[in-house]
Length: 80
Image (cartoon, rainbow, N blue to C red):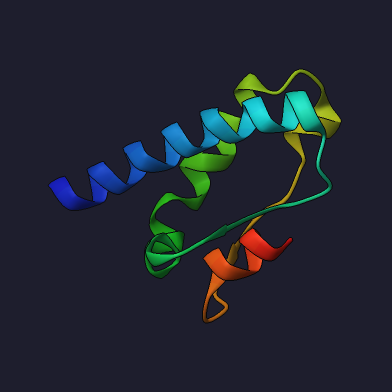
């Protein structure tokens, strides 16, 4: 199905971008919020595979990326 393929591609691109963040900043955990969290199971694997393939170390590849389903994740991120 084209929609599922598009979500998996989105997961790959998010994983690549998150790998850059992990390599540069070394966070303990990354939260993804917003509308994408409704489809998290469809692209979670693709995201982690892409992050793992571009991370510089095994520890960076293991950085947890989790869905944040709070009511207003953008406001929480802005205040942080």
